[in-house]
Image 1 (cartoon, rainbow over the protein chains, first blue to last red):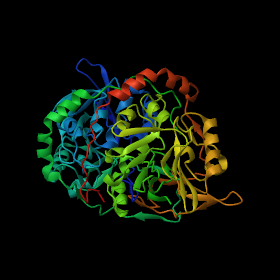
Image 2: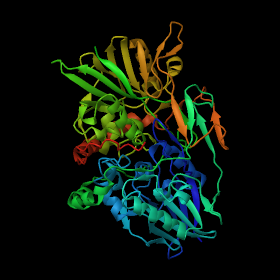
Image 3: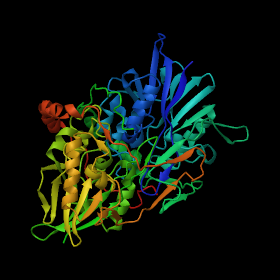
Length: 292
Length: 292
């Protein structure tokens, strides 16, 4: 049966000076229709985790060349930036997400205007809800956080595991059922959370540890928290710690006009997709190229 | 006289799971030859600081449209990603840095292969050592960390202030005189550190607070440390704090071949520069578009 491994764990940490934005990066292993083993990466993280991603692949006996498929749950900066490490892979993302990334809203700080240039560096396969990647590994459409957010459902020995991306950032969202960061449609985002809960035995959130819900709705984490901070001590003068139990819900100003903008820009988007030069090619980092 | 303000402070913090990579972002204000006031941004930070940059500009009574010039000390991911917020500005960077960014080394994890696509979204002005941006504000070449690292010297009322980028990441480097993270040339990097020390009364490092050196070579910080962490407590299980007093020096495998690669790729690079489509245009975020 297919398996899910955590290559880079997701973290629900923030600062008042910027977002570390450490999303989960996952390795899904399965076999295609002919029985050939396939290595599927789900999300790629941002550049600040690039050496860590190299190391994590190596720890699983893999190099970037062994990844057949890179699935993007969505095109936000902290999930997409390392896709250029996999020039031979097929990039799988939702058609709506691909198009949106070529003409994002000016208020959408998580999708810079240059995002589309990055996406087109790989061969793209557009997917919609229900499509199979390999047997037992399928796409589930989870729009709301972004136009084409998707999850990946994996039929594992432990039941259905769903990699949610930021359709469900944090375990606590399974209780509030409100996406804390909406760039597209808040109501759709809530329906997507409910869909995840309906189909999943185990949930791999975008920025938190995997968990199950207990019979009484509690959160049962399936991995320990582990993080080392350098350059800080608990008693560093000027360092404070804030409670995150009341993380506010933020809806991007302008979400009401997103659909109309998206439709209006269809021609511009088609032209942009066809005009992106390919600058990413093979070239594997040497062993020890990481900076740690 | 020209002035320097910190828009976003630089931080010397790291984790064992990824780099927060919060560089300093600076506002230099001066006047051009005709006396017209000019607003110069030095470095732009990565996407995880985008809403914070909007807020910092607003706190100085500015919007992105008020920035005439964006100087990049170098093209690493954590310094360049928000340049698309300033489509009307001139992008100032060293000629060597621009070219390198269009064909970076495979081991150079800080310069993804798609970096050149991003740089060409603005009108580029290539500069070399000694060029004036406005009277009292000049470029100082500081290669070594990257091929075309530059600093900005500002003739302020408090003497010569040098914004160093990652030619000098942290204050302690003024003592060790070794760049902790070398992607181009370690010896050149040391000469660049010595040059900064020779010309500067006040130093604004890439990832640390501004400082002066005292008569006996000590570090006199000119700003307080202030940071709030969310989603963590000092006693969070699994959280540890590591000493940073012995940050190791890392030199990228392959630096010895960097110059030859760069020269060999000259034609490819010229072609790439001329082929980048412009996808970034005007579009100002609404007030409140930040997510905090």
